[in-house]
Image 1 (cartoon, one colour):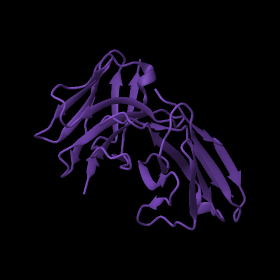
Image 2: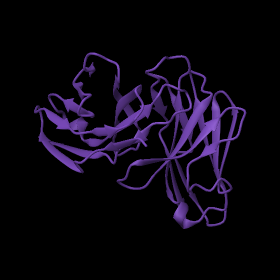
Image 3: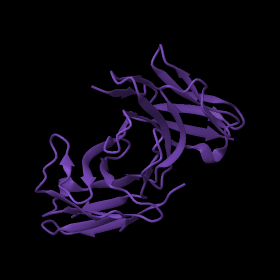
Length: 118
Length: 116
């Protein structure tokens, strides 16, 4: 299947700093990527839909100024957690769907980023 | 609104036995896709199997099969001949419509434990 690369896999930072997470589709182009957040032993919650060349669409309750998303190319989307605080500690995982694959359109996931804010 | 329900927080099975993980869904879209993913402790999400709402036959992928009952709105995952490596969290997911911008929504997941 298609490969989605996510970097870094783990980040430990001090409260107040900003953290950038990269998500790349390695062998396919993705006009749309998705960012999810997952707390321990819970489900994936969609945070935002990242659209290449336009603004991201955020889910209700997700602060767009807190979680900045940039989708500058067909293979790269970034999520920046600005002024991170301990409550932002979580597992963040990105996803991308291969274009032109019809109704099946499998959504492939990166390996995730575990963010710990001290 | 779309919704995925997984009612089994945890399931236990012995090696070589079959196990069924339950999933029910709710949607008003006539066209939708149902997916199952496996998430081991490492955190990566591994795609297992897909079922389209218009597919006439139940999907199968190796040891995985999807018991799709459209009238009941259920899409249970059946794992045959369980292996120790199958121990993981399993998520049922749905996407309504086929537009590229429609994200998957997930159930709460079921933790499967396989013992020897």
